[in-house]
Image (cartoon, rainbow, N blue to C red; front, side):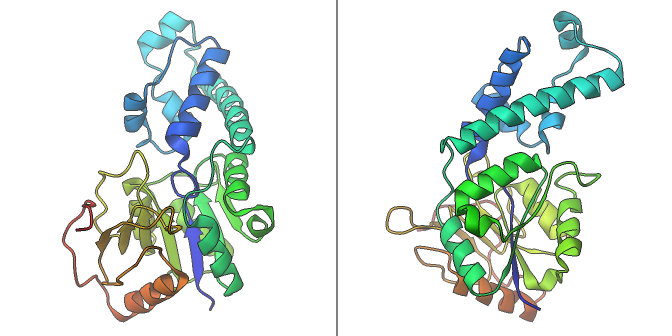
Length: 276
């Protein structure tokens, strides 16, 4: 079976949370007349909640519902949140299509190398599918994006850190977990991938640098596009000796090593520390 490379979207394909999703949420709140503006500090906590509708639902306290004149009926609230999320997604997609959120270093390079080598490619994200496809096309280009399998949105019962989205991707692409590598950026995403028995590389993002990445096979600043954006290695559990960029050779070697051993032989650190 050919190896496969699965990417998360937000924070992996592009560093979307702080510069994309947060302003899109706040623009939506202004559009619907809601007296809420999330700060960067507040959003750092909100990103721990999987799913945009779920993040918005978390602010519907009895006090806000009463003061803003929002519906109290659960069905009406669900319809309201769905409307807000559609508005937010439209704003976010417009930002992506404007070129405001470029792909992270190494994404286009590594995806192109993997495609040329016959690796299966996919995205597994619980963000809205329209948003995911827009980010993907701008991160790797429309031609390469057309070869990706995309699993996104409200297609599973439980969002990350539950493994559902990865289990769906494995089933939909006919993959053996042993032949599949995941690129994630958050502890929640890592836990989802590990629960699906997937070897995981973490590329830390603006909101996740200090999270616990115990169990990751490799933790790096990015996949790397030297010389402008070289990779910084924070944890290398299998001793790959990654240089200025994570290469397809590195990933192939990682799969070989995970086939050969049940657990990493080195590194007890669970949070990234700068390479000395």
